[in-house]
Image 1 (cartoon, rainbow over the protein chains, first blue to last red):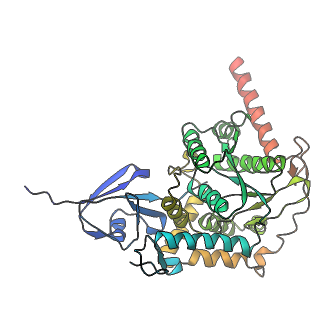
Image 2: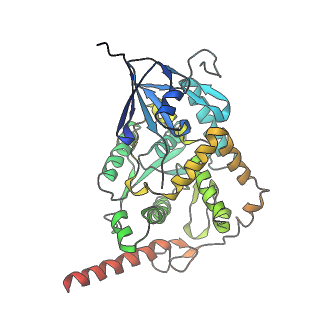
Image 3: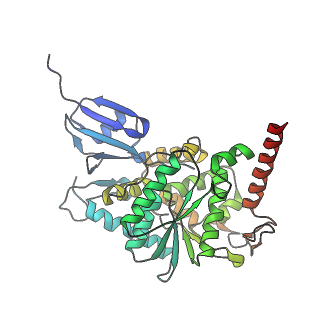
Length: 70
Length: 310
């Protein structure tokens, strides 16, 4: 059976990893991961992605929280 | 999306609050301009200042140090080891590595050696860790600055931090706190060194993006003591508003800082501090908050030791 390639969305600070269908824009992936765009930066390797960037199937992106407390 | 500044390169950072998007090179220009404008508008720093930059290993303080060095200010870093298992070691490692990459050696204060590691102190006095941490840090920021003849202490508080604090102060009508909340706290007599927050115009997303694009290796994990900090509740509320109405945060904060704002009345009436009866540090009370806390910790330890020996 053929397995369609997917997008891997890693949320390292939450120890969480999601596998979502693509291709999709970063903002749509964040919405599905229930993450607000103003609280994170999204990276792919050494690249920083804008919220309207289209992520292709097979890609792995990291969603890094920027919120610090205290 | 193309960069709105150079209109050639692909954008890496989109900033709805500025109706803009930038490629890495143009973002560096934008970010540094935001910081230098923030410094200039409120006269936070002068070229001849000796700046003590308080660095925690997180993105904001390391980015602040990076920008101030690039802008030519004379800086040294101060790292306070809070004595939090694991977390403090990892954040110190980041600070030392970053400092070494810029040919610097930070000043390090170890709270365990000072007899007041944050987790134990919080248990002893039954206070929130963040509250104790704030008092202890402020004390050492000023002490190290005064002893080292620094003219100013700089911290990495950003727009999100300051608006969260402002919202908290407003919700509880903390008028005395509102009067003192400002990116510039001038020096006062008795050895109270000037304190500044040069990142007051930039958001957490912007400092994180700057740190990432500059290759600054900062600690991304959150302080385990601050997971239920009330400031996070205010930040979440503000970020929900910012999502729907980009630019609200900066309008909120700039409006607050406007000298004609009646909430700012009384900001200059703090008076001159006197020397703490116990340690000599500048304070507006007879004994400074740090000495009061140390005394409470000492008494709690004595009570515990007495219970154990019975």
